[in-house]
Amino acid sequence: MSPFQPVRLEHASRLLNHGPTVLVTSAHAGRRNVMTAAWSMPVEFTPPRIAIVIDKSTYTRELIQASGHFGLCIPGAGLAELVDAVGTLSGREVDKFQRFGLRAHPGPMTGVPLLEDGCVAWLECRRLPEPHAEHTYDTWFAEVLCAAANPRIFVDGRWSIRPDNADLHTLHHLGAGVYARADHTVSIRRT
Amino acid sequence: MSPFQPVRLEHASRLLNHGPTVLVTSAHAGRRNVMTAAWSMPVEFTPPRIAIVIDKSTYTRELIQASGHFGLCIPGAGLAELVDAVGTLSGREVDKFQRFGLRAHPGPMTGVPLLEDGCVAWLECRRLPEPHAEHTYDTWFAEVLCAAANPRIFVDGRWSIRPDNADLHTLHHLGAGVYARADHTVSIRRT
Image (tube, rainbow over all chains, first blue to last red; front, side, top):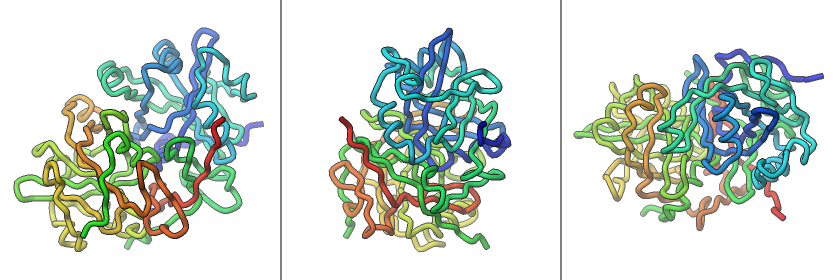
């Protein structure tokens, strides 16, 4: 049974607010794929919208172009090796879900495959077609249709980063297979 | 004397690769400003290009629109209170450099004010005008003209996050004045 709980749409952008590396999932006509992406960001809270860089060479780009949907799954630190491996293989040659033994949950709105095991959260996204930005900057805009998170680390719209959920701390790619792990917090008391 | 050292342009995108909260600096016709932004990302390595969300309500947006340039300064964890305070005041009413005692270094290419004290790095950027994305998604694209970093944490194009440079660990905004600090790394051995 999935331990994930729904995230209210007005809180969905917070899942990406701090710049985690994500896994982008996609599917079309019986094919599916998952790729690693370091470059994404929210662009709006309400309605929740995001931007993500998806290179022209990727198989994911073909699938999203065809289906109009994709998933963003935020892996926890325990998946670091998987995240790196997924980022160095192309889905054109191999079904990476099978290759890495990944269990896919169909997204409630579009059926896009979503990952939960070892993940912190997922966002189910609908492409907002922007051919110029997609072509010129490899930047794809999307609306978040639905989101869910693991309540061990994200509850009531807020992150709770603690020593006892280290396996779910987010990864932030520094380059060349080295990731920073978001494992401490600094709270500013606003006066 | 500035402790900063030049960053080669092909390494500039790595400064933003892991999603740090940044300070956006801008100036035009004798006015200047600095604001906090959680939402930015690289979109290309070579030439280095970035995207950043700048809300329509901000004074920074007016200044960038007029000048065509801005700086992205990456604060270290030691500046957490400043980062949060800068993000909660508008530059229309007050010169935040003066208010917070910030020393500005003129950018070598455009003269835009850049911050080094307590910062990890800066990127001097030229707006790539994209009125549709700016209007619809508050997303501004830019080319990085020049970048420099503090060699205590970024050397030869690579991050070096260690216990002895904790004051320079980057901040990643989780929301509501709470920041994750990137203070541990995970290295994947690629085979």
